[in-house]
Amino acid sequence: MKLREATREDAALIFDWRNDEASRKASGSSDPLDWLEHCEWLESRLETFSSEKVYMAEERDGHPVAYGRIWHKARNTATISICVNPELRGNGIGTQVIGLLRDKIHEGKRTPIAIIKDTNVVSQKAFIKNGFKLSKQRLGWLEFRA
Ligand SMILES: CC(C)(COP(=O)(O)OP(=O)(O)OC[C@H]1O[C@@H](n2cnc3c(N)ncnc32)[C@H](O)[C@@H]1OP(=O)(O)O)[C@@H](O)C(=O)NCCC(=O)NCCS
Image (tube, rainbow, N blue to C red):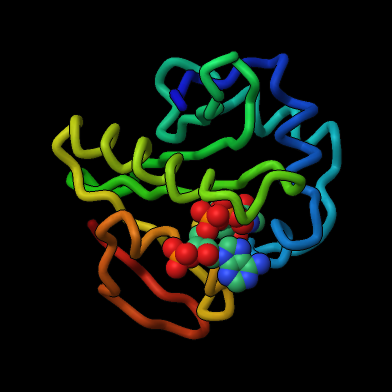
């Protein structure tokens, strides 16, 4: 498994995976995505100086299986979000990809953060397996750090 930066050509895959019901439930806004807004959203993340980057996780054969986002708000931290192809969930892919995203952030000498709904137990398990520890609890959301 490896990460590469997302491109415009990944827009449709990301759109489909993010529009899946469980993905929408996991997110702050659970409305279905609008295609044009999604393309604008991705376009802005592809800019060199964007504070948020989107990565595709690919199997050895180059087949994309998940995407991850990393964004920087504070100087010493970086926040991770992840979405696995809905057809491939529950096979350990999320756990693997979170490890790659965490390592990327550690390489940049920042602390990785994940902000997860308290109801999203699968995601919490996948982050905890990668060394993330609960750091804050607020209004239905849990913050983990590694
Ligand atoms: C959350 C998500 C990234 C996890 O990735 P995944 O590949 O499905 O999860 P994994 O197979 O790595 O499993 C992670 C853990 O959850 C458990 N799990 C997986 N599917 C499960 C299910 N349907 N019910 C209960 N437990 C489940 C696994 O057993 C594993 O726990 P373990 O380590 O104790 O065995 C993925 O399901 C996803 O994209 N969900 C929608 C978007 C989302 O919630 N993103 C996270 C927001 S930060």
